[in-house]
Length: 227
Image 1: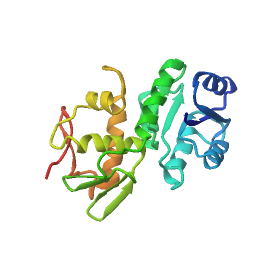
Image 2: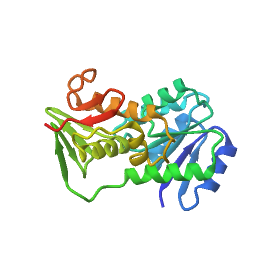
Image 3: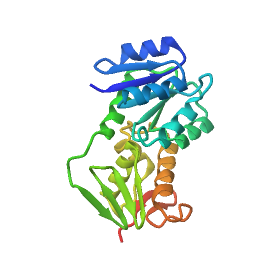
Image 4: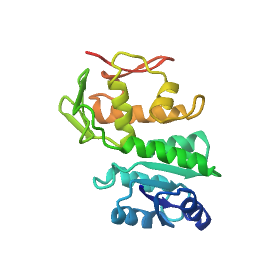
């Protein structure tokens, strides 16, 4: 059972989430500021976050979460009726792990929650992965390159781990969506992958605009440099 914080200004949505996520402990908040306070108080395993709220938007809340050392590792799923490409990009840019549009099917929400929680689980395999100038600590979720060390979000960690386990292999976006995010074939937003690759480069590359380790192969996908 996971503790899930649902932040939404609509009571019917909060109640729906509580009824739908059977087997989890669901705590709620009705606005962004209260949501941040509740996140610090209850240390949830996952946050479901509405975008359009009075006072503080979900995007602003997510940016606060990603900049706070005590909260930054908590996965975030946006729930929103704002489904344009620009809205999704802004959400991914703010640090969202996933994005479920309203109105949502409770079965879909449950699947996305399960997938994100699975990525957040600690790994008991090898202690450290080292590939192409990158080092990934499987216990602390820290990644490093040269003098740079960064703590990764659960999704950043899962994505980098997946790629580092396949050095030199070109990984298409659809495959990353299926294997890392656990989307069915043909489902999922390529921008989700693109923004997380960008975030990894900003954390680990000396020059993110000209990456030397996490490479793009035009119209084919992404690859971790082997040497």
